[in-house]
Length: 96
Image (tube, rainbow, N blue to C red; front, side, top):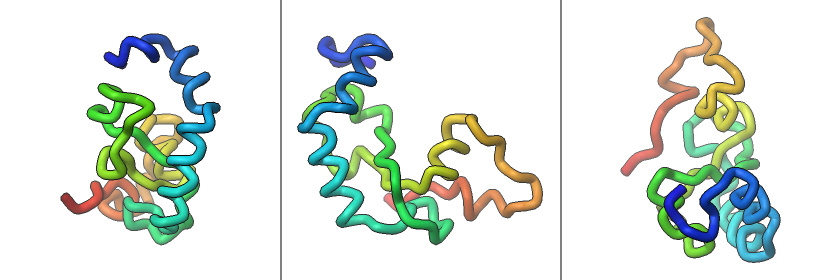
């Protein structure tokens, strides 16, 4: 993270609990109710793109992706992609 205010994981985790982030997150998830990876599940997580870390607290909607928990966990490697599930559905990038 290059934003000087959020240079550590602990500081970033604190930021995710601020009113600024929670308000932005809630507005974005309301406006984008389905996972943007195309799986059809309800979005529950607003995922930061690498560009968004440059100015945390001033993120732009296009720098974040509304995702379901499963797709978010797959992106971060928490859950390996299932070999029986078609990867284009789970790991598809949102259209530019």
